[in-house]
Image 1 (cartoon, rainbow, N blue to C red):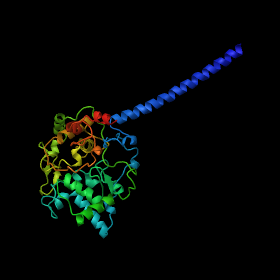
Image 2: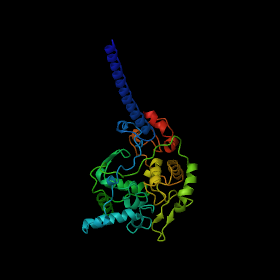
Image 3: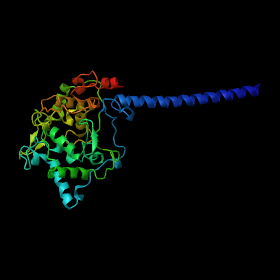
Image 4: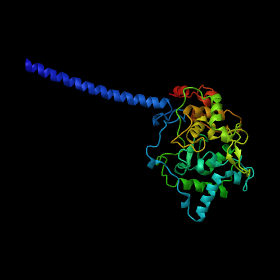
Length: 349
């Protein structure tokens, strides 16, 4: 009997140990799933959710895993001293000082509002997480749902000129267009695909659980932005009168309602990790809420309007924060512009 009791005690302990291990494994699985869900609801959506009509649900924010993986623009001193190299250098000059060539007093043409491409794409599109051009060469031509067509470099450049520079299309056969295309290809020449490096584009911000507030944003604007861009958002013009030292953020000389930065998620991400001027993604100054609210304030102010009614031929592909209807859901334009975006996302889920 003593041996039988010992045997049964041993069996009992083994069963208990197996049960404990099973519970631990179950706990890990639950935490994994819960954590994944929380990331999804606070701004992150995995590849399994790309079929949702709210196509621009922001991915979870991630910092670079390694400085070695962070994309770095090629050194401009490496541009060859050739005819093609001259075209690349001219393209860089056009990106950095667009208005001198194509602005209201441009020496090549008068087709834009006076802003430079690098007002939105910092340092001629070379700054990590500064809305850079690093992966452009690797992904274009590409299908863009905004136009419903496959777009090449020329179409993408003209989109920016028409929207962010509130201008007219540049001749696709012009030397200026060829130069900008050459520069974009040179900047991304070491990028084989969009997953080659980190640091492209912008770092998305988690969505707020409330609408972004223009009134709070006005306070944040006065605190962080007005010293450069002016109390009235009009920017600061260079002494030459040919380009802006600090671009206008609203008003008739700023970007129009078709621009990418008119979506507050893009504007909020941009200012969070790049503004005030000199800020980097490694040491942001604005809080997430300040960034969202400043974006709401700036994009609530008057600016040029343009008819882009042909955008989004498939309205189910509109980003969750696209501020103009119609939509496939029942939410208002105001909620699509300012949020909260959680209920919209939940409706699709």
